[in-house]
Length: 142
Image (cartoon, rainbow, N blue to C red; front, side, top):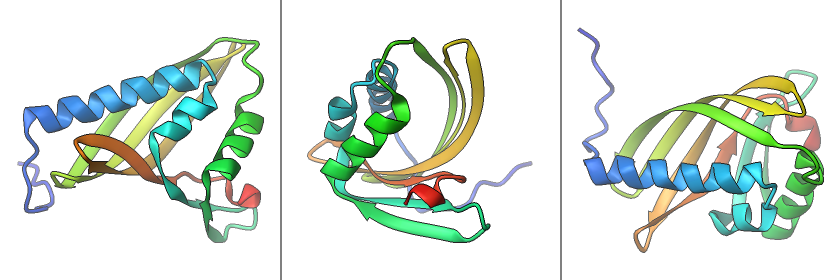
């Protein structure tokens, strides 16, 4: 028998469905490289956690302007299709907080990359928003 960590909160079907819907919208905006719409789904300042090429952990906070500028640079101009196939494992800490672990395959311009990352999302006024992004390998850009 596998025991899950006890968070004190058991998510409802609506909790999971609303989180899945948020990620579907975010992935749709990402595929279109609509960075402004991606930013609409965040809480700023946004926390970023990564590691750098020296193997040291790094953290930063970005405002909306820096998020849009950096993500526009990272994602390119939209000349090629991007698709995502993702498996997400949410851990709800409360009705308003979730840590979501994602294993994803991103395909762009015929090139495939495997990604593993985590996001911390909060729900405010009934809507989810991401507040922290965690992914290895980006620390030199922070």
